[in-house]
Length: 343
Image (cartoon, rainbow, N blue to C red; front, side, top):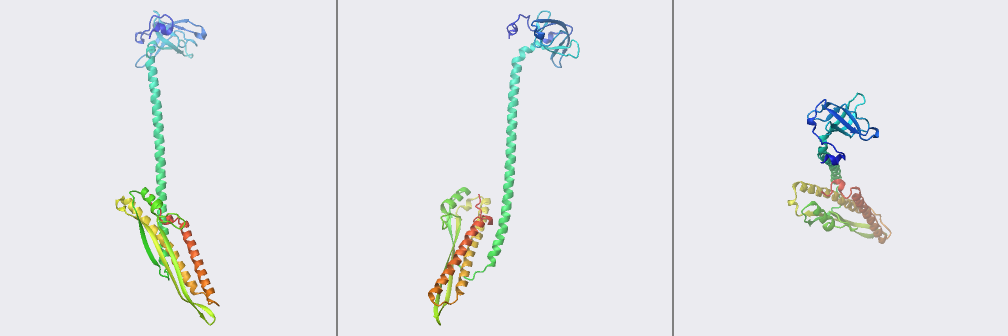
């Protein structure tokens, strides 16, 4: 840096604060109250600082408006930049060492570096705070998910127990003919398994919806009637019911992780209970048809008797088909019983 070019006036150079001494005569040049190039005179009263000189204390006048002016020695060499004065005392004026001029680029660079470091630290701390909050949120969500899963499992076990009691307590009079079949599903993970069952392989109901499993029951009835004493009476009533269950068979289950295999078996067990309740509806329909058809009173003609029997049986089937639909809706197709596809 060229001091003469920097300040726009001819000066005798810049000297280090290490060459200064207390009692040295010094001069100020400034613009107090806008009065440019005003000259003041005084002494260096003290050199203040810990490891180095940070301030030059002087008796040379520094009035308002002189801050930023020059402090010179008797040879016209710049020794400081005037900064401030204390109004509470007399001749308590201060300047910073002129050698700091040469440190300005480094000081600004340090300041910029410090600013960049502070910005980087602030960004890092903000990112850490976001990550901490995200981690806390994920932990809360996982905790809530696990708590909900435990509640679901406990409720499913309770409903399964009630369903078993209901199934065990009912003994059908009309013995059903039951057929259970399985469709093969090949998949390497739960997502593929889900797609194979619910998009490709699962059985369709009468409305075209695809399910993991399905139960169909079919009831047939036949009877003989004869004319006795001018009336037609019901004879030899026979009611049959055929039930067909269809369940998935995961052929790759041996390659599945043990934990998921347990979940899959639990899912199948719950499906079996759900579809046993569907079968129970069919059993109850068959028993009710058998009871009601046998109880039909004699009629004046056999055609009327036969029509009454078929109407009664048809109404019973509609009743239990509606109960089948209600069973699916009320249990979310077995989910409340634990038949929720494991993911």
